[in-house]
Length: 210
Image 1 (cartoon, helix red, strand yellow):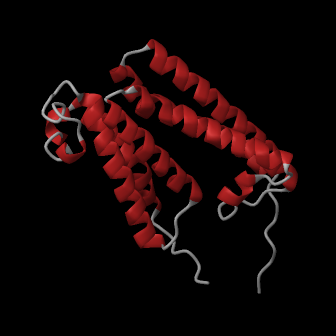
Image 2: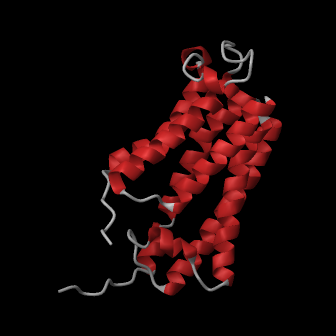
Image 3: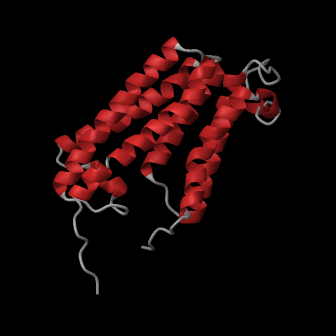
């Protein structure tokens, strides 16, 4: 089997964050995107500048599928986490548009965070730190290092699920959309950077190659 083709880090960042940025922008400027996503929109909402969350949801669905297709075209592989995330976005986004109820798209992050957390915990119970499968090509840790890192990420995903529920149930839709980009993303990046000392402590030497 051929090795997966490497992808430029900046391009990967753009593919990961692009759909979220478009989701935020489309929510604040729905009139710009409404004509482009009209086939996906419920009757009477496509031309409404007040239907920001519905226009943004349609844009988000299209953008995340396009990003996934570009990623596959460049690497010839589909990582599990992005595929699962895209599937949930399409399902819950479709329900949001079909039912004309923004609750579905707001529940999407909660479901994804809980799914990741439960999956990681399940891996620990089965003595298979699944986080190692995700980051193995980037980091090389001892089994104890992977276990501790997995526990931390599982707890963090549980915390994000709770935080999402608090934000969307107590704040406006516009605030929730902004928090997805300017709240969850910085929190995740900060948490990832705080794990560097642990990864340094439990770094394992890679096998020597000829």
